[in-house]
Length: 312
Image (cartoon, rainbow, N blue to C red):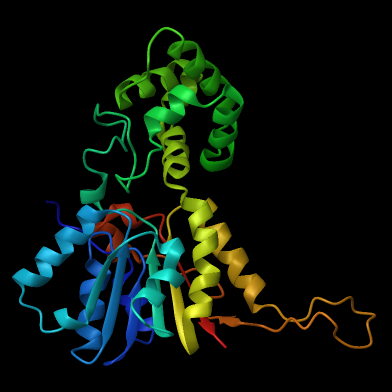
């Protein structure tokens, strides 16, 4: 088991205004670093709901809590589920409103191991965080049409050579099923110009990101999660989201802005007829990023961006 380092831990917990007795949701448990600090802050009178689609992450954290003989274990609810279903999760626990919600959209090293997430190891193409779901990376690369492959590589990977890569994948699978990350990485390498193979990032990075996002429905789930989180907060409660690439950050920023906006009636209307009022105020006008000291000890935090809003 690796040593997981939670990103922007101090900044996130402080800006969520977590106090003793608070009811808090860690919507993406992962390695459990944020949850451990939240448990310390809320004390025995608080309640923490920690959610993760990966049941192995739930079990690892449960073991850590039990081993530490944590006094707040009775007030900790570990839920194996998707954060997009936040409303249903809280309803099942008979919790109406919460004081703070956190979602760290990154993945811990433990969660990436053995799932075919990386081209650095030759592993079966899987990429699922929820092992119960049917869709896998293997299914996508072997069954999606060339057009659909090109679409997800463009939309989710922002891959400039999406057309060439999708064409090569389709050609390759006519003769053999694509089964491993190594096979896929080699196909991608054969589809891009020589110069692109020696850039700052590996030529397979964007394609692997796009397929992982498609497998786990990451962006669609994020779009569902944010409005449900805002609805679940008490007035004055805060929502913090840590994103790791531009697609995620753009969604967070835009939905925060939509919910912070008021009347959308044309300016020449004598009075408001839309009835739209702001639901939140944005606490972070610009995203908070890790300081150099944190980056020195945790280089993987380099792309992290923290945005926070407060329920009105």
